[in-house]
Image (cartoon, rainbow, N blue to C red; front, side, top):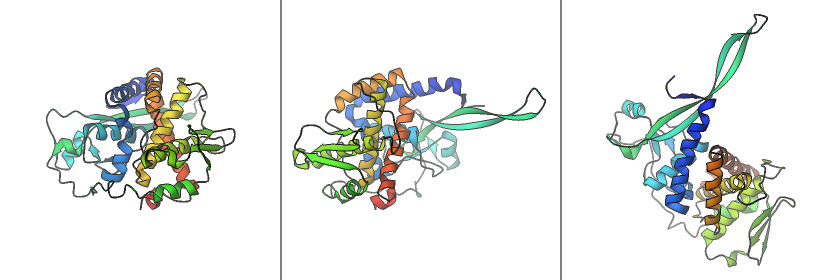
Length: 305
């Protein structure tokens, strides 16, 4: 079946996506963390031409593609999907890859001749093009909002409300470090006045809040203890992705942590060693964000309203 890969070939597909991500990290530095800020406050989440929002690794990957390539539309579709809408992909345009997991049921018989069903996990891949890469599509069903971040720069009420109501224990002190202590289930932050600007403060706070969701009482993620290890790199990647998502949801332009450059090398090393990190990190970042929203007894739409 065209486009369908067995689990044995997963590593090759994930390695391809991880290589793309690594190249973007190297070429664009901190710019790769920006997609969710741009997407959620301006264009909207990456969405298919069938009006379905992408999630997990696909949202992460296509969000990066949008930010780096400067696409103004959040809509992606396969060659055939655009054709069915009367649009044409321009000659020479390069596609981006998305993946979809499914399980096939295979009928078989056991030693007793009894019919059995076995599950075969498969991963299907698609090549998609952004709406900016096609002609003859009016985009009438997608609403593109004007970028209002300049006007809303000082409106941090959504972010503060979320921080105050998510249930996290946060301690502000006159100190030179920000960190989450799993043993005490507590976030330690410098005082707000110590930060040069709002974006630095909220970027750091959101990063630590995502770490907070990994406690055994909540999502029970395994925290790496040694800098540079796979576990450490993965948890930091989850935290930074989740922080970017929270930034977009609350409409606060949060900057990556000041020590982002150090983490960048750790993430690149981790991705090279284990390409699956990129997929699981994106999925777990989404779960972390939802945990914070659920704890505050709200929804993404209510916070962003």
